[in-house]
Amino acid sequence: MGGAVSAGEDNDDLIDNLKEAQYIRTEKVEQAFRAIDRGDYYLDGYRDSAYKDLAWKHGNIHLSAPCIYSEVMEALKLQPGLSFLNLGSGTGYLSTMVGLIIGPYGVNHGVELHKDVVEYARQKLDEFIKNSDSFDKFEFCEPVFVVGNCLEISTDSHQYDRIYCGAGVQKDHENYMKVLLKIGGILVMPIEDQLTQITRTGQSTWDSRNILAVSFAPLVQQNRAEGEKPDTVQLPPVTVRSLQDLSRIYIRRTLRNLANQDSQEKGTVQRVPHKRKRRRCRRRRINTYVFVGNQLIPQMVESEEEEHAEEEQKEAAAEEEEERDIGDIEIIKQVNELREQILALPLPESLKAYLLYYREK
Image (cartoon, rainbow, N blue to C red):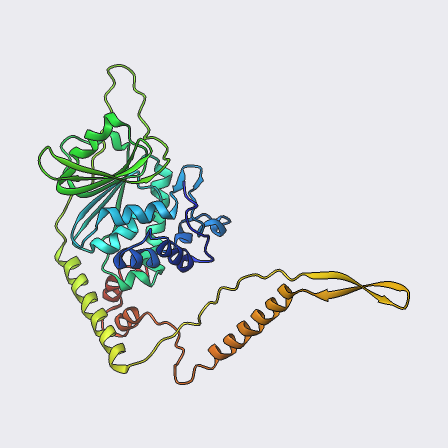
């Protein structure tokens, strides 16, 4: 499923296309998509396909099409402090984007059937925390992934404000999913080839609406011998943050605000070189014939289309030259100001590492 929008050259191109096609409609969803590079979740050698609006699968690793994820993110109506459960959490790409919106006081859990995919998701999460500048621009709710079949979740599990299921749900499993949802919560899942948003309005009342026609692989049901007990999945506990974690969140927030304020007071304008998209023009020549004496001689004559293409190329070159002459606007290399401030503090290195969220370990 996918192919609803044009392919992009990079992650920003992809998001621009999703916005233009109205799959991304709110600023917070746009910010989360721009902060997480979809290509980072692809295996080496496959990244060229990352910015196409297509699903990707390699072994057990799977990513839905970007247009699906954007519709899911919009339909979940995420807010800071909410609890989120991702059934079939896969690579962790969606869970990481959700974590940027629900923030450090939210809950972010994922259940994935395949152990190797959970290990892959944890690796990608670790790379994001250690290496991505986006991590320092948001207050983040780190996802916690567990291995298991999401149809075997313990009956005494807690309920969630938001739930997404990334596999096709049969009608007889619909109520099973609904039980995991709090009153007032939103569940998004594919049912009978329709991505569906279900809102729990009361103890036994629901509102449903179809979002998008989709095609998902169905949920995997375990084959058990008669009388054999299922492998019950225990969801991660919902715990209160430690005083150390709360202190780190507060210190990082204070330093981030100071860095932003300092940038505003300096009035420094940062500008990134604009990447121009050029339309490829086909240059054609027309074969004509002229008489020279009593002989017919072939001659190559430029067509109007070629002349128009040459004019466009000249205009593009002139615009590029104009962009290089940017006058008083200073081009500055992007600096991770939060990280620089933490490293400059007169603190023990171990405490700096803690404030950097173990990025240097």
